[in-house]
Structure formats: structure tokens, C-alpha cells
Amino acid sequence: MTSERLLIEAVVSPMFGQNAFIVRLEGRDDCVIVDPGFEAEQIIARVQQQALAPAAILNTHGHADHIAGNAAMKACWPACPLVIGADDADKLTDATANLSQGFGLGLVSPPSDVRVVDGQQYSAAGIVWEVLGTPGHSRGHVVYLWKGGTPWVALVGDVLFRGGVGRSDFPDSDPRQLAESIRGKLYALPENTQILPGHGEATTIGEEKRFNPFVPA
Image (cartoon, rainbow, N blue to C red; front, side):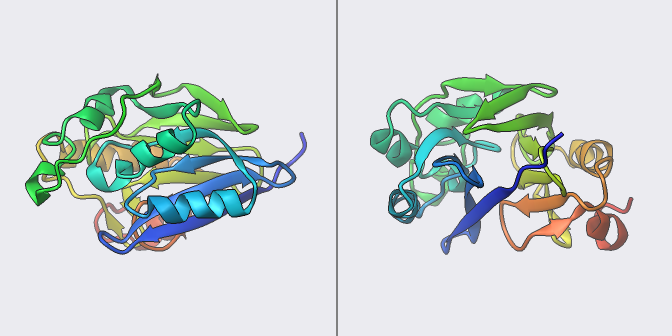
């Protein structure tokens, strides 16, 4: 099996320190945009500067800081499918559910085009993602896992951070589920799996299994 190289560029939103990602395979001119946040203009500019064609917009979950740029992405690329976990799809169009109403923002997104579930594969821009259902931070949170090269890469949203974990005090959060998602789904991955979180710096599964104080392996 040929090992592919994934090229990943982060765009950080200062408001919440949220990481959006532009992801593509080396040698291709299409890409996926992951969790476009409040820096939508910057994301669009970077995609256009590289003459890339977005093939999908992936949301790990439906909280406002991860979906704030969805509308701008769809306005720029109307045919680009918007993908989210089935149980978080309602947050896209509900400002209370996506938590933006509490900040006085009243933010909503276009509705989903594709709803994914645990164990499903989703392909876009030549990239095959395995979908891991990881509830706990939100009911329908998913992780997108790429196994096309070494190391594997997991876009984990707000489940696991470097030295931390996602909040579990929101209306549809569950701390027990969050710990189960981390131990059962993420800690089961190879230790060199690269973890790209929704906030903060990248890490690896091995580093978090050894040093994360919130969810010991």
C-alpha cells in the first residue's frame, strides 16, 4: 500500500483560540476545510492563494466557534458539502444549541448536506476519513481519522487536547461519555497517531496516554 502525505495548515481564531484546518494530499489541488471558525476571510484567502478547490467542509461538532465560518464557506463554494455528526446537525441552525446565543451572537449555519455516524468512512479530495463517534463534549461529536500514511492523523475537535480534555458541562455534555470516548476510541489508536485538536497545540496519542492528567490511560 502506497503511503500518502497529508499537508495541513492551521488558521487560528483569536476569539476562542480555535483551530481551523485546511487539509490536502500532496500533489493535489483540492482540499477539505475543517471546523471553519471566526477567521472565515483568512481561510478563504489562503485557499484561493494556493488555487485549491474545497471538496468538503467538515465539522467535528456544532459549537459556535467551530461552525462560525460555515456560511462564508458555502457562499464562496455553494456545491461544497457541509459534513457533521448526525447527532450534532441540529446545532447548525439553532443559536441556543450551538451556544452562540449565550454570547449574544445568535450565530447560525447553513444546514448539513451530509450527516456521518460512528464507523462510517467519508471521502473527499482523495482523503479517506474514518469517522469515530466521540460523544461527551457534545452529543454528536465526531473525530475524523486518516490512515493513509504514517503516522495516522486524527482531527479530534474538542475531545482531547494537549494536556487537557474538552469541557463536559454544556447542556448535552457528559463527563463519563467523554472519558469513555477518549479511552475507548482515541487511546486505542497507535501511540504515534498525530492529534490535531480544536484548541491548542498538536500532540500524539502516546504523549496523552502518558501525561494527560485528566484521563489517565
